[in-house]
Image (tube, rainbow, N blue to C red; front, side, top):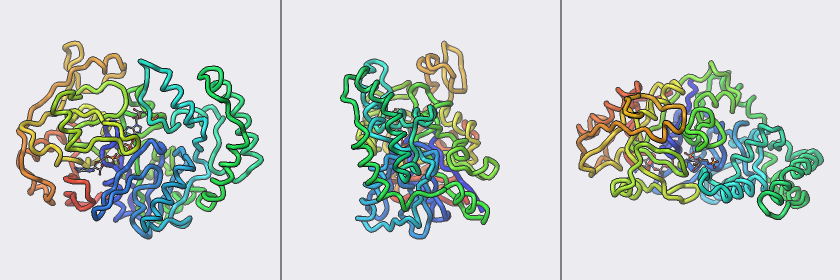
Amino acid sequence: MTTLAVIGTQWGDEGKGKIVDLLTEGAQMVVRFQGGNNAGHTLVVGGETYALHLVPSGILHPGKTSLVASGVVVDPGVMIGEIRALRARGVGITPDNLKISEKAHVILPYHKLLDEAREGRAAGARIGTTGRGIGPAYEDKASRLGLRMGDLLDQPLFEARVARALEEKNCLLANLYGLKPLAVAPILEMAGAWADQLGPFIADTFRIVKRAADVGLNILFEGAQGVQLDIDHGTYPFVTSSNPTAGAVSVGSGLPPNRLDKVIGLVKAYTSRVGEGPFPTELVDGTGQRLREVGNEYGTTTGRPRRCGWLDAVVVKAAVDLCGMASLAVTKLDVLCGLPEIRMATAYLLDGQRIDHVPGPLSDFARVEPVLETFEGFSEDISGARTMAGLPRQARIFLDRLSEVVGAPAGLVSVGPERGQTIFPGSFF
Ligand code: GDP
Ligand code: IMO
Ligand code: MG
């Protein structure tokens, strides 16, 4: 039995969806454990593209169990829409193969309104959130004002707790943001429809994970976002409101920490970031534009153009150190094809002093200068490569240097969006 977590090492969108879909082949269960529908995970299989936000990325494989565990925040309307859209494309989803934790918190209409209103007012201090209500839903979880998926099945309790929450939310909506206060009744009506449709999927996912681990199933944990968006360890306040680091596998699913066997770090061969916040290797020139166009760096969730720049190995090393990553999966190497030279930050200069870590204070991180190493580019089309030896020498030198700087080998290299466009000589399970 192996339990394996796939974690983004950068600012998200590293290609976690593609790799989770691929690795599901060897797993019996795939578990989302944090984040919500701020995530956008793209799978390309047989020329068909699937953009998933809440449903785990193993769903295309028949006979596997998908869990949305307690650490996730669930927008029930989005979940219902996603299940419906997948079913319409022939993906078999039933309460037998998809389970949603009774303890997962619900994103309610006021969470989205508050997320948008706060961002709208914050001129100069915007986070650039996805506007999906993620932050406000996690705030309510922490302040014990939240509602959980299981509460949908207890109407009187749900009504009382929504009424209690609205006392505070309406104060903010009306008095701070000048919006119309919300009434309990329409939310209750919506919740009734959600309960009817999602009720059969709601389960005690902790017990399901525990049983799977006890009988020795291979379990794959699908991270959302990336380590630099972690609320504790990322570039706060320009972060999301959950922990995309490996520690959250345990907290968000209930798997005991000593039962997580391996962590795979997902690394895009360059860097992208959506939303605000410092980004030392950002390229605001033609090369950045080229990475965005060739890499199709437009958000899966919001369609926003992603900021692009060179690979930052200092950031990747922070993820390896925080998550104990045994191995890396490097994606989108094909996007670098045709560049005359390729760069990688292997250290920073902070006020002229060389450092090899991400500094804690954001004001320090905002003014570091990347120490860039330059590599020879390659012009061969590598999308057909299926072995490491089939990669151009220049690409292998680049990958070897990354492994050397961060202290973890590249066990998988992705050379195109399709499931099969992958160099994967071994197995992670
Ligand atoms: P995630 O959020 O980490 O799952 O990543 P996204 O799905 O948001 O963004 C990654 C994008 O790159 C998607 O459009 C994928 O289809 C695509 N992709 C994944 N791996 C590769 C690759 O190796 N090469 C290319 N060209 N595209 C890839
Ligand atoms: P995947 O799983 C990239 C970013 C937002 C914003 C910040 C806070 O597809 O890699 P939030 O809505 O979470 O409060 O926004 O986090 N963000 C992501 N960026 N990929 C994601 O997910 C992201 N999820 C959130 O752009 O900067
Ligand atoms: Mg994404």
